[in-house]
Length: 105
Image (cartoon, rainbow, N blue to C red):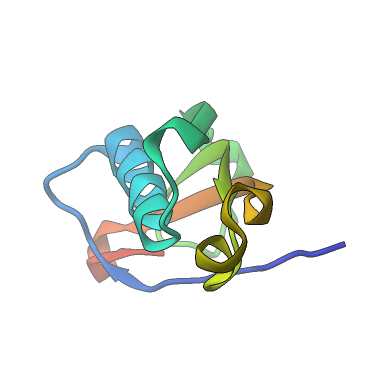
């Protein structure tokens, strides 16, 4: 089973609310992976209730969840093998926003 965990520390995106922000991060990931627009799907995106937040987090912290998929190839395999290199990749993305730290994680 192939699994990857990626954690990125990003500057707070003050221009986007929580749902548009996580959708943009998902779109950015698709662009980075050279995924065609027709091979990018979002099943759902939602702000998680405060009750799921760790009590040690700052009070202004929020969590947003996105579940989707992309059809992507590893490294340069798409150039070598074409369509057959594309694989279905399920993606679970969580954005931890901490405005007091000016951070999206």
